[in-house]
Figure 1 (cartoon, rainbow, N blue to C red):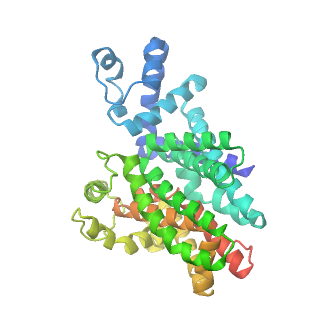
Figure 2 (cartoon, rainbow, N blue to C red):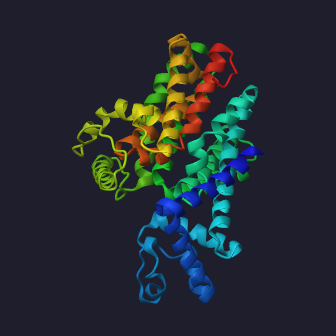
Length: 403
C-alpha cells in the first residue's frame, strides 16, 4: 500500500515547505479551523451550529462575536474546508500534522476509488493504472495536504466510483449512489466547477453506454449523432441548473468571470514574481474565450516546458508535462486515427475521461495566467488523462509498458 504512505508523505512535506517558506492557504485553513475548534470547546451549541448549520458570511450579532477572527468566514467554499479541519481537530487536539494526515487519507479513499474503476474495466493494466492514479508527483504533493485540492480530489473519486458502480453497472445501488451524492455534495461545497465538468461528461458516458448495448450495428451508427445531439444540450442544461442563475459558473457569466480571475491572478503573479503566461486578451465574451480553447488545453496538458521552470516545483511539473507530451505523440503518430477514434466510442469511459480532461484543462488555463496556479488546478484530470493514454496504447498496440 505505497499509495497511502505517499499521500501521508505528501501531506507532511507540503506542510513543512509551506510553514517554512511560503505560508498561504494551508496555514490559514488550519488557523481558522483551530478557531472553530476552540469555539466548539467554549460553546458546544454554538460550535455545532457553526459546523453544520451556519452559512458563511452570516454576521448575526450572536454569531459575529465568535467568528470575527475567522479570515475565511466570508468565503463559503473555503469555510467548508476549515469546517472539515475543525472536525479533524476534535481527534487531533488541533495538531496540524495529524489534520493534514486526515486530509491525505480522505484524498486517498477517492484516489483508491478511481483506481478500482479503471482496474475493474482493464484488469490487465494494474501497473500502468497504479502509476496513473497513485504515483504522479504533483498529485501526491498538491492532492495530499490541508488544502481544497485534497478534499475535492477525494470527492471526485467518490463521484467516479459511485457513478460507475451505482449508475452504469447498477451494483449495490443504494451504497454507491449515496457515495456519489456525498462526492457531489462535497464538490459543490468546495469547488463547484469540478462538479459542473463531471456532470456533462458523465451524461455523455451514459448515452454512449446505452447506445453500445444496441445489437444492430446500423442502428448504433444512426444513434451516435442523435444521442450526442441530445447529450450536449442536456449537459449545458444540467450545468446551468446546478450552478444557478446567480452563480459565477452559469453559462452567461463564465466568460466574464474568467476574464476577472485571469486578470487578478496575472496581477498577483506580477507582484509576487510568479511564473506567469498569457493566452492573449480576454474581452469577457464567450466567443473570445472559446477561440482560445486549443491553446489553453495545450498549455494545461503540456506546459510549463522544462526551460520555463523557475523553481524545483515548477521543474517537477515541467517533467510531468514533458512525459505526457511524449506519451501522447508516441500514441497519436503511430496508430491509425480511425481506430483511435473508435476506442472512444467502444469504451465510453475513455470518452468521459477525455471530455473531463479537456474541459478542465481549458478551464484551468483560461482562468489562471500563472503556471503555479495551473499546476494545482490540473491535478484532478492528470490521473484520468494518463489512464486514458495507457488504455489506448494497450487496445491499439497491445502494450502494457509504462513508457
